[in-house]
Length: 270
Picture 1 (cartoon, rainbow, N blue to C red):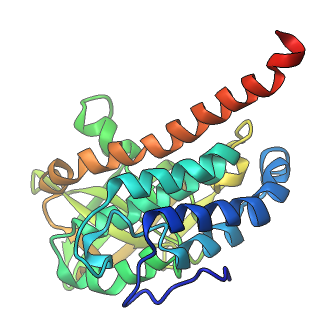
Picture 2: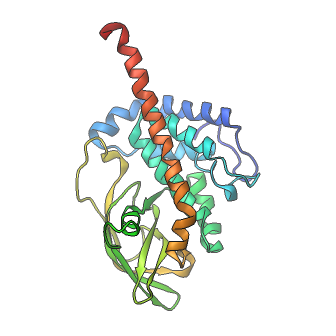
Picture 3: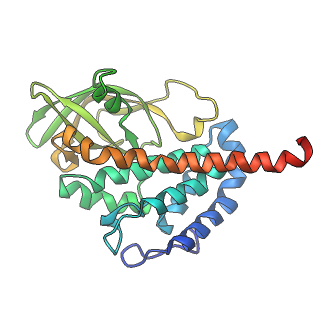
């Protein structure tokens, strides 16, 4: 664990110190793995685990900060620092940040209180299963998950083709259509739930290290304690801007990396 790890309950590194500590993790832990991530599909779990105690995953989450404020800029800068070296790891970091953002915006206090400290600290790693949701709300495709109400929760069936930053001990946020109700429900999914499985269905150029799987729901029971919002459309309206804004961290880091590479070869190539 990084020497710069802090007490999550009381402390938060100033942004300049956070970025220095993040750069140290990049230099010491990530750089030796970058080629392995790209060519061998290695998942940089230890890098993500080391970023969590620095506060890199909670800058944008008021409920995870002592001051109760949100600093999207700091979250974007930390992600940019990682993405400058490895975009796959930066993408996994975006997934983690976005999972925390879902919980921050949860209507259900229970799911936020239980899971936000774990996600924001990196104790639990998480993904985002909202690609289908975004397309469905834009009228491009139908929701791929459907659920029905049962005592104490919902039974969910269906599949999601692409969800990243996952593993057997990970969680992710997604949305399912509620049968016969004319509305959708936003939930947190634990990959260890009975009836849930991960399937590697495709190979990606230089993206194998993002742990991207198809997610299969076979009569998965999701308890009420895991529901983020019983009104998925309302949740999406208040959270969509933050989801998109956080993506700037990947772009800024990757663009700066390209600029730096151009400058490095300029003396030789003119």
